[in-house]
Image 1 (cartoon, rainbow, N blue to C red):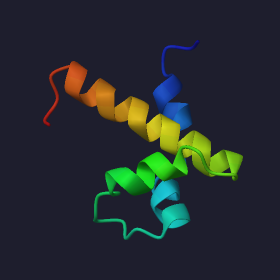
Image 2 (image 1 turned 135 degrees about the horizontal axis):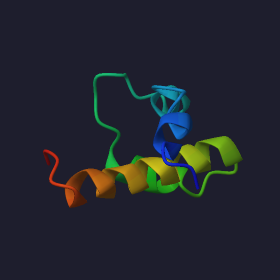
Image 3 (image 1 turned 90 degrees about the horizontal axis):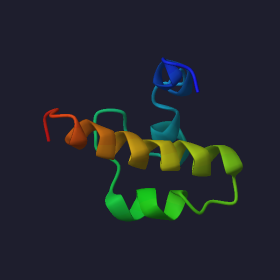
Image 4 (image 1 turned 30 degrees about the vertical axis):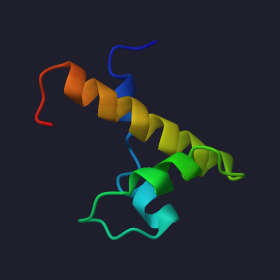
Length: 65
């Protein structure tokens, strides 16, 4: 895996928000995100799983909670 895989994975800023119909300035509700992880649309499911992963990385490395 490359060193900067997150930069490539997050090229489509706001894509998950648009797919789920959540305005850009608001947080995606946890239930909606969990449901999106099991979406029939593979792109939405992949975006949701990445969002969960990035959420845990943020906390683990001393970022703001």
